[in-house]
Amino acid sequence: MRMAFSVAPGRHLLRGAASSGRPALVAGVSACRAAAFRRFCSGKATATTATATATATTTITITSGKAGGRDAPSEADRFLHGLPRACRDPRSGRFMNPWLTAAGEDPCKRTASDVFRLMREWLGGAPSQPEISTPESVESLLEITKPQAVDWEAVRSARGNPDGPVLAVWLGHASVLCVCRGQLLLCDPVFSQRCSPFSFAGPQRLVPCPVDPLLSDWPQDLAPNVVAVSHTHYDHLDEATVLALKQRFPEVKWAAPLGLGPWFLKHGIMLDAELDWWQEDDNLLGPSLALVCLPAQHWANRWPWDRNVTLWCGFGIVAKGQSAERRQMPFLFAGDTGYCPVFKQIGSMFEVGLAAVPIGAYEPRWFMSPQHCDPEEAVLIVKDLGADAALAIHWGTFPLTLESSVRQLQGVRLETAGSQSWSCEDLHQGPAWKVAVNWTFTACFAR
Image 1 (spheres, helix red, strand yellow):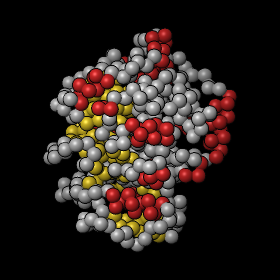
Image 2 (cartoon, helix red, strand yellow):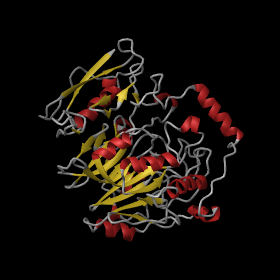
Image 3 (spheres, helix red, strand yellow):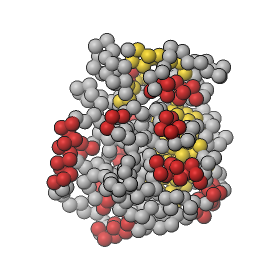
C-alpha cells in the first residue's frame, strides 16, 4: 500500500542542492508536516493535505509493506547529498536507522532470542569484568552519589549575560539545562523516582533528584524557553515530569522528533515543533538562535507494540544568519545514540562548542553496542564532532544495564587520560562554555 501526503517544507538541511553539492536551506514552517504525519499515523493520510499557509508544498510518499520486492530501503531512501535521512522500513512502514548491517538490517534490531539471552544474563548477574585503573580512587569517584542543590543564581547570571559563555547544568541521567544567549533549553527532563511505565516497578534512582519532582524549587523567573525531548523511552520522556512542567510553566515551548505529537496532545500539549532530522526551527529560541534536530543511531518505543512508530534524535543550538561553511553550534545534545558516522558529518558542518554526550548503559556490548556508546566511543564522538568540550550524560542515575556508575566514569577518565590532546582534570569552564557543578563530581573533559 502506498500513501502520499503533502507538507510545507520547513527550514531543512536536506532539501535543495546548492551548486557546491552541499545541502541548501529552505525557509518555511513545520506545522503542516506535523499535522500530515499525525494523520498518517492514525491511518487517515490522503493524497493531498489542505494547508492554511501559502508556502509551497512538497509531496512525500511513504510506502508500507514490501516495495518492489526490497527487503531494505534503497540508498536514495537512506541518504541525500551524503547525509543520513530518517528513513522507513519498507516492510513495516516504521522508522529505522539508515546505517545498515551487512544483512541489510537496522543495527538496533533485536530478535526475541536476543532479548531472552539478555534477560538470562541479567538474572544471572553481571559477568566478571577486568579492573580499570584510573588516577582517582573508587572512594573519591563514589562522591558522585551526592548531588547538591542547583545553583540558580549561576543560571540567572548566565541568562542575564547574552554575550557570556554557554552554561550547562546536568540534572541527572540525560537531563540537561542549557543557557545560551539568554535562552534556556531543557533537554530530556526526567525527575521521577523511576524511569518506568509503573510507579511501583522499574529502574529506581541511585541518587536523589537535584530538583523537586514537582518543580516547586525551580524559580518562576527561570522558566525554560524550550523543552526538547529526544525520543519516547521512559528514561528520556517521563509523563509525570512533563505534566509538572506544563503545570508550573504553561508558557514553555515544546520540541520533539516526528511522531510524538499525538502523545503530547493526549497530555494536553501542542508541540511547537515536531521535527525531522536536519530540520531547524527559527521560532523557539529567540531572535538569534535556532534549534536543529540531529540524527542519532537508536530506536524508540513506549510499549512492545509501538517500536519505532516515532523518530529519535539529538538537538543542536545554532546561530542564525551565518554564511560561513561551518556554522556555529554553541551547544549539542546527542540524546541516546550508538557510535555512527554522522558525528564526523556534523563536525564538518558545524563548529561545536559544548557537547552533552552519553557514556552509560552500554553492557553487555553484544546487545547494547548499536544503541548506546561506551566511554571509548563517547570520546570518539566528541573528537569526531571537533567539540571544544564535553559533558558526560546518561550515567550514574538509573541502573539500566550491568555496569556500575563508577565503572562508567572510570571508563571516560581512562579514555581521556590516555590521550595527549585531551584533559580529564576537574575542568568546568573554558572561554566559551561553563558547566555549573551541582553534583560533587561532574564528568567534564575538554581538548
